[in-house]
Every structure is written in structure tokens, then in C-alpha cells.
Image 1 (tube, protein in one colour):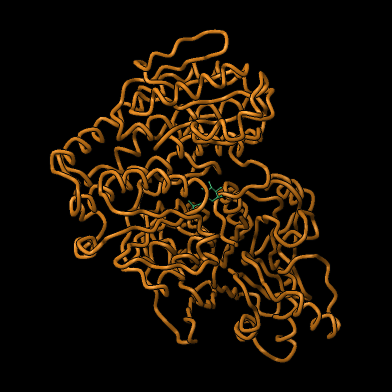
Image 2: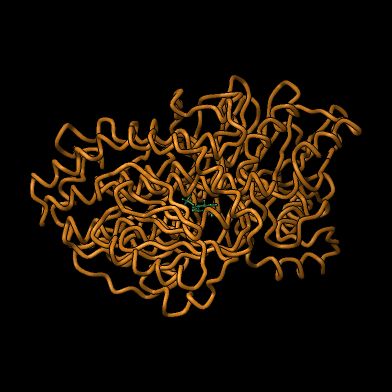
Length: 609
Ligand code: G6P
């Protein structure tokens, strides 16, 4: 998704802007650009298709510098990826970078064209800069012009605007898209994600919805949605927000897969005792709220949605309360019937996913008992707007395909299911058994990661294929869905997941020797049923790749490759079985030579609808 960086200082800020853009590369983008006001008070705009490295090459040919500037990585929404659609966009002396969507851009474009403005791009963003320019021409200063302009916009935006006529001023605004202020010494920065600014500061102000900000190198003024000047808290981030560094690994995704034992330990630490879940981890008010909960509604997107689907099995089995799970983009536009005392749970790595955030806001209107977010980014919009929050401690996740965020979400959801279960069907013996399995989880994940070479070898069978099926039963069905999502995201091989019992109702027609079939087969109550389903595949000449408990009784033969996993407790099997599927996708993608960390067309943090 689009990324914004901006800076006002007394030194040349070009390097800071470029480094910031590089740190935002993980969000996914198709073009990059920068605008500075140079020493002669001229606006200098440079933009290029492709990676930030291409922009750097352009800047080498055509250098510039300045003490104030804005920069952007674009992920196309309106208008295809191209140099002219890349940000910043300019109108005379004014330049803007924008993240979000201006929904009434057609109407504004018509008005502005009528006033004589000509458009150089197909973007919705260009109306912003002409609108601001038009208001400046009517005599407003930059801040008042941006303030008046945003009142005419419908949709979502985070903005940074500069004007050569006021060369020490940067105006920023946030509504519906994230924006943070970095606080330096006699310098200020803006960015869509604090990660972009970690090289220059550890002090941040997380803007609220509707905030408008007037920035000079030695002065920061923030105005809230009502136009009142406000003080916002400065948050100092600690080392826990690790630097975005690949270390010894070839890709972020691989690093993040390997970090799972450690981050699962971190997420569990202080949240469970030897025998119990410490429910204070959900917040001081959690106990009083949990006492009333009679059902749960989970809403999320992508991989986070899959963790919700897994949790449904736990919530209904262990806690004995109904649990409904829905993708956020559907939930937000549906009339919902809210059961009495229902807890609304959002799950999100970033805490900024536009659909999930909108679903939370609509749930507040709809009358849920309370909201809880399971989220990986403290100070994110979801964390700030929910009644309760549980932070997964996965650390920054940079690879677009989510890995460690997913497994830490599953741990959080187990803790929630147990905490709610206590108040319903779950005995303390059962709680003790579940907690004891969680204590074993990090080591079991280490054991599974040690199978990497076997999985690498297995991946060779996939690299020339165009389609694949992933099968699971019960709680392993959403694990199969997540396995299929990983494969399609990064290797571009079409992958679909089915509950294995559903095979004969359609997908069996697709099975032939060209269709690899992955099965997730722990030694659980449904193993024998799964085996029968897999025989249906073998009988049709399909090639099976079975991730199986070492005691499941599968044998390698011409039509079956078995990858034996250690025996694990049923409760943690969905977590443990996820890891080999992540590794499989990773190796297939590397063999195919795709862009593993930034797959085509995808974005890490989807902050537009
Ligand atoms: C994007 C990412 C996915 C992620 C989804 C939800 O599509 O590419 O990896 O699962 O957004 O993001 P969230 O931050 O809300 O978990």
C-alpha cells in the first residue's frame, strides 16, 4: 500500500526521505517519488516507476537537495502504475503526497477543469493538489488552504503538502489512513508507519482521525477534527520495535518463519503461568467484560481471517460458546443481527487494515457488548479504538505473506478461548493440559523447522505446476486454507483448499497426475476419515504430499510423499502444521524466482478499501 515520508529540518533531508521509502518497501508498491524545495526555493520533483533504487538512479543523474520535502511509494488504485501517476503530484508551487482514496474525485476534477486546471495524471490525488492551489490563489496560507480543501474531500486520506511560497512549512492531515509524526531535535518528520523513521528518531506522535498538522522545523501544532488545537502524547518506542533487517537470511519471509519459536515464546511469556492463562493480559477491564460474554464475532482479512476460522473450533469446543467468523469487507456492509452479550473481536497484524477498522466502527454502532483486538502493532488504529487489546509480540513483519503474525495470533486466540472457556464448559484440568501443551509449542516448532531440507526437496515437485489442492479436516481445514493462500501469494501457483470430505462433491473432477495434492494429517479423531478421502485421490492418479504425524501410518510410495512431523497434542497441531506449509511455499517461490517478500500486485498493509 502507498507509503508517505516527509521531513522539515535544518539539514538536507533527501537521504532521510529515501531511507524512509526503503523502509516502507515491504508494504508493496509500484513506483516512487520525492519532492523537495531547493536552496533557490524551486520545487524539485523526481519520480520513477519500479523500485526505490530506480528513483535513486534518477536522482544520481538529476541531483537535488533541500531542508524540506515529501516522498511516496505508490500502490496503484486510480490509474495504472506509471511515471506520470506516481506521487508527488504538483500544481504550480505546491506538491502533495497522498495515501487513501478520494471518492468524489470525478466531481472535483470536473470543477477544477472548469476553473482552468489541467490534469497530468489519472489519479484521484491530483484533485487534492489543484484544490489546495486554488484556495492558496484565493489568498489562504498553506495550512488554511489544506484545512478548507479536506472539507471538500470524501473518502480516506493521509496527506503531506508543501508550497515553495512558504518554504519552511509542511502541512499534514489524517482521516482514514494512518500517519505518524516523528519528533526530532529542531526537526519533525511524517510517515505512514513509524518504521520509516526509526533511523532518525524513537519519539512518535500517533495522529487521531481528523487531525490536521502544521509543521515547521521548530514548531508543531496539531488541530483535532473540531479545529481545536490539541496536545498529543509523544510515545518513545523501545528496542522491542526491532530494526527491519534481514540478517543472515535471503528473504524476510524466511527470517520470519524461523523467528516463530522465539516470538511464540515472547507472546506466551507473562500471559500463562505453569498451569493457567493470566487473563489480565487482555487488559484491566477484561475480567468484567469476559464474565458477561455469551458469544463471539470475529472479523478480519486475509491470513488474519484464517486464524479466526481456526479459533472457531477452539471457542466452540473448549468454551462451548457460539463463535462466528467473517471477512471484514463483507461484515461491514451487511445488516447484522447481534446476539446478546456478544464480544466483537478483530484480528490484524498491522492494526490498520481499512476494512477491519471500518467493521469495528460499524460494530460499535451495532450494539456488541465490547470490542477486543488481537493485533501486532501497538498504537495502531485498531488498538486505539478497541475496548480491549491483546498484543501479539511477533515483532515487525516485513514479508508481505504473513507467517509469524499468524501463529502468534493463534496463540492469542487459544488464550482467549481458554479465558472465556473457564466461565463456561472448560474444567481446570483441561485448562492445565492446554497450557502445558502451549509450553511445549516453541520447542516443537524448532523441531519442525529442522525438517527444512526435506521440505526444500519436496518443493521441486511443485515448481512446474499451475494448480494445486490443499486438504484438511476439522480444525486443519483452515490450516489448509492458509497453506493454499501462502502458495498462491508468493509462487503464483493457483492453490485451493477444501475440507477433505467435500472432495467428491466437485474438486475430485480436477484430480490428475498434474495436480499436486497437499494433505494435513495429524493423528487426530478425523485421521481415518481423511485417509479414506486421500484414497479417492490416489484412485484417480493424483500425487499426494502428506504432512503427517509420524504415527499416522502413511507410507511413501509412487503416488505418495510423506513428510513425517513429530507427534503433537491436538490443541497445538494447527500451529505446528502451519510451519511446513509456509516453508513449502517459500521454497517453491524461490525455485520459481518470484519476488518472495513483495509479490506482484499485493501490499502488506491494506489501508484502502
Ligand atoms: C494484506 C496482507 C496479508 C494480510 C491482510 C490482512 O492482504 O498482504 O498478509 O493477511 O492484508 O492484514 P492485517 O494487517 O489486518 O492482518
